[in-house]
Image 1 (tube, one colour):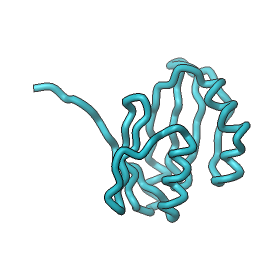
Image 2 (tube, rainbow, N blue to C red):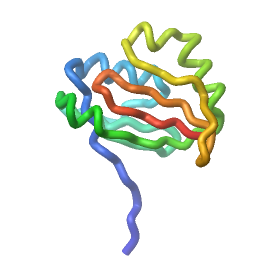
Image 3 (cartoon, helix red, strand yellow):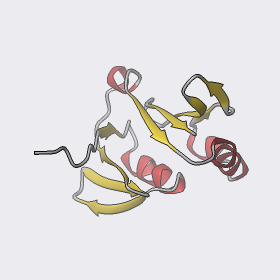
Image 4 (cartoon, rainbow, N blue to C red):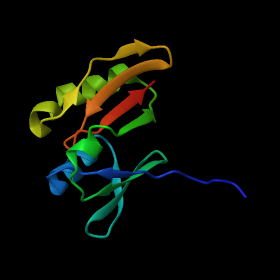
Length: 116
């Protein structure tokens, strides 16, 4: 028996539709939508966006996504003005012991670590 995948349930915050739009702008596509749950994927990386708003939970939830180029990803997000459009926070690429990282705090308050 082997584990085949891991797909965390990510809270949407108080605006489920805006969160769905944000993740599409970040490069994910919708694989399926069952109302209060939406399956997202990009290049084999998957998660389930849940229509759930709990700020304490969201602010203590973090995800790490491996990417090929942190500088390029950061620049794309900045050029398209996604922080202004969605009210998200993004850090400049920073070298960490585990790789170059861009952090995004999404609409719900979840911290996404995009790591090269």
